[in-house]
Length: 207
Image (cartoon, rainbow, N blue to C red; front, side):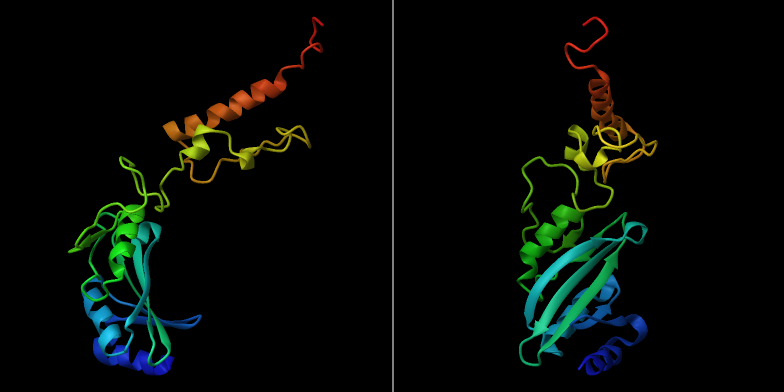
């Protein structure tokens, strides 16, 4: 079935699409300008009328991937259709005109990755509280909770009272090496070292 699907995509879009076999189905990559054509082709010509999900992937300097999973109830085949938008201007046409079920998936993806889905009927925040700044699923998003309080995984050997000290500094994931966030992350670590260096009450030099 995947060979038949691949032939159908090639016949329709030629060498403008890329394809690879994945677990459970065929993955097809299309340029953003063919995004709606590709989804319409999957729905109408390949009988993929069941919309499952849409999401984004932060691919760093390569931009953001947008991925849709659809399924044919009649022919029993899965399809992953994906495209990529640039990091600086992540804009893509909304899929809601092809699959109405994409509406809240696009709202979530817009909120978490900052991708603008042009033509969406109501692209308003879905999950995050009012006034939240930033897009949490971008890989450059700093997890403030790991800066505001000590992160257990940041303890080095010797800091917990067991084992020999280590010169290797362990930084919480998501916290940059430099800048105000890095300084804020170091503050609780330094306070923890100072506290552990103090002798217990009644055991100091003046006891």
